[in-house]
Image 1 (spheres, one colour):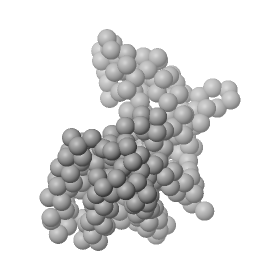
Image 2 (cartoon, one colour):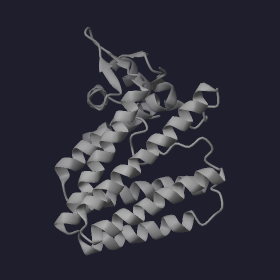
Image 3 (cartoon, helix red, strand yellow):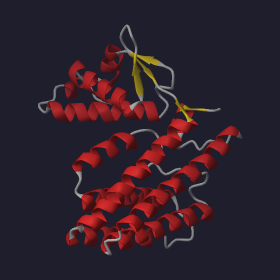
Image 4 (cartoon, rainbow, N blue to C red):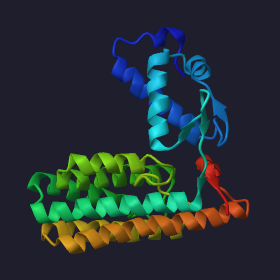
Length: 254
């Protein structure tokens, strides 16, 4: 949390980014639960920053779908149906598939391909363990996010990448929003091994300039996230929601 002395920031753009990240974290951590009303002034006082970056952050989170503007001022934290989340993941897979196809058809830069291969080698090293501890799982999440970003870079399509960024900002729709019932179990590690094989296959398809194959693999890759989310939601029904995923409370049950 920022103190009042930190509220004076010579870089307004930096202050806006910090406000956005902090406010998003308050929502996804459950500190601002689904359905709760929030006002601009209350958030200004809570975060200790000026109204301008807070106003920009609130508007951005409304665009992302995490907040809904109220007719007479203020916002309410959105909740999502299971279908909303499933559709967001499906849309993410569709856009990622399109980027993978474009990367294959346009011819990917060799330097970025090499960087992507190095990233996958590092993931292989993480998955060499029979099960993952907290540090290993965090390393996988970070490297997985890096690989997906490199795939976007291979396509060189800022227009599609911007739309993908908006979709991926929803809870659980991001490539880094990996959910598993027991992150430390051998089953979780096995699931990540399957995902890693898909990473290898899509990169191979891009390098061979097989656009249709690259697109199909990337779309199938997103469906793995769908399956894992369903398993976590099933655990949520039984009262076993992982403490590390409070944002799951934003999902309305049928």
